[in-house]
Amino acid sequence: MDQHEAIENHVATDAEAVSSAYVPTFELTEGQPPPIAANGGVSYMSFERGGDAGTGAALDAAFKQIADGQARAFVEDLGNAPPGPIQTKWGVGFRKYAECLDYIQANGIEAPEGGLALPLRYTVYEEPSYTVVPSNSLWRDPARTDETKLLRQAEDDLQRRNLYFPQVLRDARRIGEYYPGLSVNSPECMDKLGVSLAHLESKCADFYDSAEVQRVFYPEIEKLLLEFFPGATDALVYNHDVFDKNYQGDRTEDQDAKNPGVNARYANLVHNDLNDNSGRVRCRELLTKNLRNFGRTQHYTEAEADAKMSRRFMSINLAKPMETVGQFPFVLCAWPSFADQPYITNYRIYDDRVGETTRFTYRPEHEWYWIPQQGPTEVSMLKCYDSVTDGSVSRWSFHTACIDPTTPIDAPCRKNVVVRSYVFF
Image 1 (cartoon, rainbow, N blue to C red):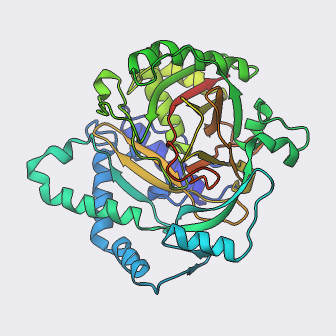
Image 2 (image 1 turned 135 degrees about the vertical axis):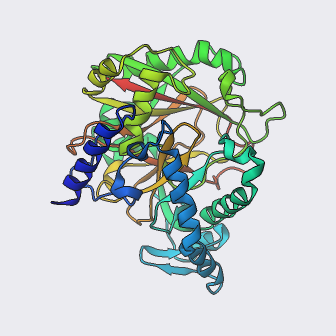
Image 3 (image 1 turned 90 degrees about the vertical axis):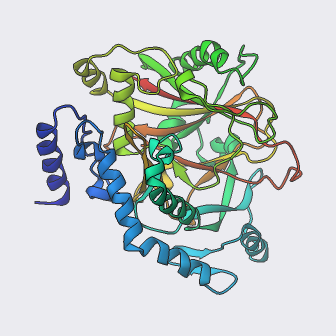
């Protein structure tokens, strides 16, 4: 019995034993190696105990990983390495951004017109990781103070298991030059590369007002998606984030009030928001439970949701600037350049679910794109999940943020709204 069959059997057995749990079908894209993940890639939903959605098993695994000490030792070895470049099996990496930038300049690494040669930050630890999200009740339990100290140290170590590597970024608006006949403003571009660009003149006047964003912007994006993708029958925008480092107002997040707050931090680690498991789990919990759904209320039975998800569906993230982007623009990586690369799962432990995001190790041939001076009517789109697994289309892209050397370092940082959606066919 091969690994795939063993995992399928395990999932089927647990799904019968725990009927309340939705356990997603184990998936691999044709040609894709198994992920670097716990449980052979099986969702933690299959380890549900007493309706906890597998969160107890995930927490146990997180503390077991801390106790075995390997991750901590890796961080110490990385920190104790001699100053300067660190030779990895993927190439030369650097602990400091400036060191990597010096390397790029010293070695004459250049980008095509409109592009950039810059350091990007990747993980260098090929093991699954665990993050207990800030809303988890564990953080507020006075009886678990010792555990939270361990978790904070582990989270700090997680951030230190990354290095900067040199990469070349191309101008996304010039994709047609690299792929003759392919327009960045087309669904074909999304199918081929996992990224695309759309146009929108929004009537939303205040993106800091979460109620207005939900009332005005969500329907605008759903309309955009249905017009952008031929054959799409339904689009659901289910939440959003606002990014503005320089915002002076109240940043407070209130999930119960469907208010994401205002984020001051820009993710600068190569990652994707979903994977084989979480792409399906997140969709089904929205359709059947409206779990953390800021958008239109859904009323699907489990059978109806299964039928809807038996056809093709995708998760798309869309980012619209409030003003022309200064510093910390998004950068997006095209699917073909990593289609045969295993992803590394990060488990995000909530009180009622275990989310899964992904990280990737460096490859010099990763095909990166950016959108110089992205304007407020330009909406960048990236695929986080696609249910088609036969290799005929992109499954996802991955992304991060970068420093723009063509703009003053003290230029206003990116102010944008990012919405997350599902598109159904």
